[in-house]
Length: 549
Image (tube, rainbow, N blue to C red; front, side):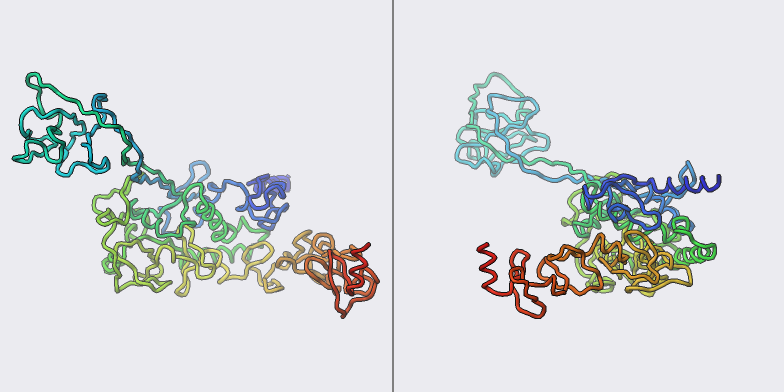
């Protein structure tokens, strides 16, 4: 009965993503089926992240467990159902107003539309520029065009300016005055002449609000600074929902932070001693290496360095816990949904005049940091180090550190995977770190003794002949069945240890009965030959015979 429960538990674990289509292999994969100890699909050999599987919940649980029992507990929450810690991903929706230019046709003055804005353009004047001396009063958007009954008209608060001695409003046509109809009360009857200009298209500027959803943004800072941070990342790496940047983040979350590097329950058949060693390893990196980058401004680092020990950098509260502070323009609340102007424009909120700050340069590229530009700070690295947003990468794989989660070791930033590789050997078969004292090394990789197996059929290769195919060990029977080249002469597969001759896409056994002239059967080993449509020819005479036949 206990065995049945255990089997059921394993089956349920393998149901995650079961049957999902592969995004790389398309129809060649029958659907995702997790290998029982490799971290790949049994059908197509691709990883789970390469299949159409929604992993947000599972990934949040994984990162939540990573931060459990650390100073970053403010980034996780206990799920009410089972008490499992879950990472609170900081998804942000940003609304950015952008000016667009459309085309509008003016309505004749005789066709007044309430609530519309009508403007008369005298003949001879460009419809794209307003009258030179006309000044519109705030709120006066409706104008009518009446004939001037007597001299110049100046109305306090109206949207027109009278020019003394001209007898008309400046820049208006002869005998016309452009005034605000809302500002002049009607007294008596006045004969009005309506001038109907010929309708012509004009440019009209409107503000369109563009909403952008980021699947993750730096927590604890205002939206203006967060948006500027995103703008400094490579376009293809910005985690905008539904884009390649979001897919990149998903794959890097799986690659950089493998759950089997932190949870013994995710590993395959660890002994009690190996479980204990793994728990000690996890405790060590949580205490000495694990951290989350923070966004700050270079000009603020001097002040923060002086306050070290009292509170952390911008975006951190006392003790360096994220989410307790804000950075940027005074009065910016950092709301979840913010409307802002174009970041980076002179005088825009959250920015300051750009210019090199002599005291700080990027720890990676060594270029000077600019005042007002967001920089990434790593608490474990110290207050004397800053990174450009695009330079906050793993020192081994040079990929952006996903969600700015880093591991600090000997003056270098690592992602979780490559920090683990620097501490322990990793099995090339199951992708897990090796905590056993006994393991094997072959083909430049490390392997659990039980995992040095054929990549196709999983048979153990100790003492057996194998072939490396795409850096994966393959047993001889599987190689002959699935990977061997077929001889163009006899059509039989060429054994891995046998000598062969290759020319273009064609291959032959390096034997007289296979590598011979297709016309006269002359052995071509060590001889000059010609190839034509997969056939071997020893001379022009044989070529002519073949072509004539």
